[in-house]
Length: 271
Image 1: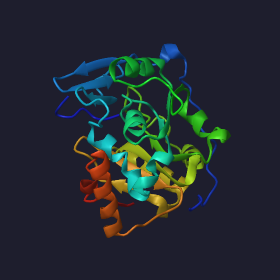
Image 2: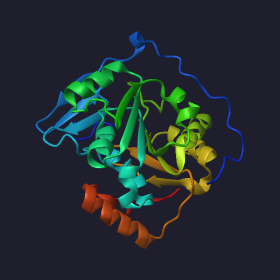
Image 3: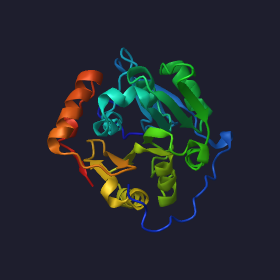
């Protein structure tokens, strides 16, 4: 989820508190999906002006929003040749940009979790989300319950978390307990990326929750985009590659998949 732009292995030191549960899961209480577009880009909204996702109309499998591109920074921490053998999961579908990119461009086994059936229907109809298949699954469900579901634990290499609702006040799920469950989803080489509003008062609280779950040596962060989105990255097993190694990975990412990865290195560092 983004602000409107001008275009429209360290264990937690202490056990996490009891996991919060959603109170708003009745389909009648979920916000209605609306669309807008200009000549180049289609936007997904949840009944407000906030952009929940977007798609380049002529290039539907590319990633349009800058912060969503940065959610792909997990690629800096793995060998490029290993990517297609890995598994991805998105908690929050948005306009399906990440789901489509992992499935179509990276050729990964991909699962997306979305609580709002209207969002899934809109992505199928208006945002070119492919039908489910042996390597693509879009599941209706609560992200907190999925993250806590033991059969998923240890199976995800690339986890993206973007869980803002129509009010866009703070992430819907943001506790140390929730992030501990996200950590449990990951393989030993797994990485989580999270979208936060870096200029909001809630950012430091969110960052502290992620550090509590993953350990302070496992967390990296981007500077905010001009719209205020900050992507935070957390590794199941901490890594601190050198500058030259990161540059080589970034160049490979840019050459293979067209993401602006070399630019990331100017605004991305251990947090």
